Structure formats: C-alpha cells, structure tokens
Amino acid sequence: MKTKWKMLALTAMLSAGTTTANAADNGYVGDLGEDAYYAESSEYVGDLYNDDRAEPTASQVPYEESAEPAQYFPSELEPVSFVGDSQPYYQGDVGSGIAMTSASCGCQSGDCGGSCGNACAPVACTPSRRVASKTGAWMTAEALLWFPQVRSTIPLVSTNDAGVLPELDQGATTAFGGQDAFGGDLQAGFRLDGGVMLSEDFGMGGRFWMLGEAEDSYNAGGDGTTGSIGIPYFDSDLVADQENSLKIAFTDGNAAGEVDFQGDISVNTTLEMYGAEGYGRFRLLGGKGYRSDLIGGFSHFGIEENLTLAATTTQTEVGAGQGDVYTFNDDITAENEFFGGQVGFLTTVGRGSWTLSALTKVHLGNMDQTWTSRGSRGRSGFADQPGGIFANNAEQTISESNFSFAPEANIKLAYKLRPHVSFSVGYSFIMWDDVLMIGDNLNRNINTGYLVLDGAGAVEPAERPQFDGLETDSLFVHGVDLGCVIQF
Image (cartoon, rainbow, N blue to C red; front, side, top):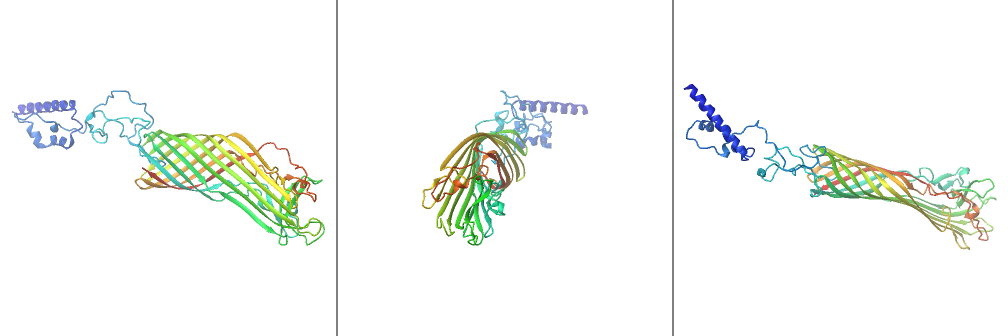
C-alpha cells in the first residue's frame, strides 16, 4: 500500500509537469494573473489524486517563482546599442525636462497587451533609437544678472583745482575714461531657450539672450572758478612733445599768460550684446539618474560699443577772440558680429526633485568687425571742419574679418516644484577672444594746430601716427541666471 501511494504521487507530478510544459508552449506562462497562485492551494493538490479529475485549465497551471524567463530571440537585427542602453530607464534633462523611458523597447510576443510595463517586464530588451517620434517639448525663461568685463580707454576728461590747467602733467585727475574705467557693473537681461524632442535620443532647439545696455556718462560745466575742466591730449605740435588740454572751463583770475574759458562737456559710452543659436542634441550616454548629450549647431553674437563726445566752450578772456565759441563733436562705433558653429556637451544628473546640469561648448567662426567714426569741430564765424578730436575724419568706416572662438560654460541647479514646472539657479560664462573695442583704438596724439582754428579760421593737417590696422582684444561676460523651466 505504501508503494502504491509513492507511484501515484510520481504519476501526478509527471502529469502536472507535462501540462505545464504544454501551457508554456501555448504562450500562457508569464501571463497567468492572480489565478496562477491557485495551483499551490491544498484543495487543488488534493484533486490531483482523483482518478476522475478533469484536464487542468490554463488558469490552473503551477506558478514557479524561480523559473527562468523564456529566452528572447529577435526576428530581425537590433539597432547598434550605445553605452547606457541596458539601463532600465533614463534621467530627464533639466534643460528640456523630457523624461526618457524604455517603453519603446518592444516585447517578444503579441500577448503583452500592448505594454512593456507589466507582463513582459522580465524580458531583457534594448531600446530602439529613433530619429523622429515626438516625445515632448520644453521652454526655459531666465533672468540674467551678468557682469561685463571692465574696459579701458584713454583719459577723456580731466579736472584740476581752480586756476590750475587741466593737464595730466600738471597734477590733473582723470574724471572720465582711463584704465578700467567702464564695465564691471551688474547688467540685467533675459534668456529664452526652447525646443522639441523628436525622439528620446534626438531633439532640436533654439536660444536667444540679450543684456540690457551698459552705459557710462559724464556731464560737467562751469567757468573755472570752482575748478578747471579739459580734454587732455598729447600735443605733437609743441617743440618738446608734452601734455596739453582743450580748456572747457578755466580761469586764472585774469592773470597774464592763459586765456579764460567757460563751457560744458558731455561724454557717453554704451555697450550692447546679444546671442542667438539654433542647435541639435543627440544622446551619447544615458542611465539611471543621468544623461549626456552631444550639442551642435549655429551661433550668432552681436557686440557693439559706442562713444559720443560733445563740448562747447566760449572765450571769456578780454581781448582778441573774446566771445568766440568753439565746438567739438565725436561719434565713434565699434561693431562686432560673430557667425559660426558650435559643439559641446550637456550633462545632467538627478536625484528626487533635484537636477544638476552642466553645459560646456565652444563657438568657432568668423568675427566681422566695423569701425565707424564721425566728427566735426568749429569756431564761431567760420565753417565747421570735418573731423573731431579723436575721429579725425568727417566720416570713416574700416572693416575687418577675423577667425574667432568663444568658449561658453553654464552650470545649473533646478528644483521641480510641480510635475511640469521647475525653478533653477545657475552661473554662466562666455568669452570672445577677438573683439573690436573703442578704447583700444583711440589716438590721443594730435597737434593743437589741427584742433583749434586760428583767428583767420585756418587749420593745420592732423599729425597722428600712421594707421596700422584695428586693434582687438578679448572680452568676457559672466554672472548668475535665475530661471523657470516649463515642460509640455
């Protein structure tokens, strides 16, 4: 009797194994649902020993947790895999906010119910790389709090004590212009960045940023009783070349030797800059909590500096020329336009609601530079002469073009407040290696006979060093970014 029970048990196990194998061949294993656990109940085990039992149904197939998933044999060649493709999911990018999933990987059979998330989860699969399959879009708006590099120029206005000539070799102070005279102050601006992900791997976007106009100005006037004001220059008309100045406001108390003047002067300089880009992004690396994209595209930058000077002075000294009015005007512009390409990397890492991104790239291309100067000077009773103090022609335009590069870096920390809205704070740095600036090209070597019309209205030719081409230098801007990222 004992032997018979053992034989019956062995027969039942073989019968159950055969049924399980048949069910697996028919595609039922792995899609059993809750009924799979019914095979482990004592009620079903007891039925195995009844001779009149019915053939087990698909819902009564035993479930084994330790069973190996069926091997997947693709019917066609898979795309070439990239580093990180075997990861279960991919971290979205803070710049775009496009979450990456593996839902497009595909399953081994048609019994998955159209989803890879549940029944087919045990199946190892490789994400398919697609060029066009829109997955989402993004828009980023940022407030820029940037600091342009400080800029230098020649001394443009000098001041001294009352009764003392406003010449630099007489102890005069540079009131406007000079070394590190302009820039370094906070400039506000904005930056917009938006685009669309054509697939989980490839996207296209555009960016535009602009800084507010940086402006420095000086306005002064008087009769010299509270202090002298002048425009300093190096006089090449004197026997021993030395410092001199155009007197705007000066008096020596009617002492013999120096002519008294009263007048006013206004000097203004501005700096404007902007950037526009169109780019593509392609995923190089991706994994749980990180993603790295290759960035490439087109870049355009505009940098423009302007200087205007207007001065009027009237001779108050009693004698020849009393009451004559002298005027001087300069208007100079240095314009830079960059056209080229860009290449770089955008890497993001995330944890919870926090995401840290780093953008590094370089812009390579052509910098078109244009120098435009206009000027005039005159004396009452005579026609104005072409050319001002530093602009030695009525109108002059000089253009050059040079190869240039501009490295750029941006690091940003974002916090997701809502499912589709994040706020970020970051730091940006951009430097252009070849920029035309006004301060590098002003020439203060000039002869007095050119600047001041004599009593007959005659002028001398300008005595200046020979022009050897425009001078250029590097320029950078950096600062803090405060932004909002919207995903849709």
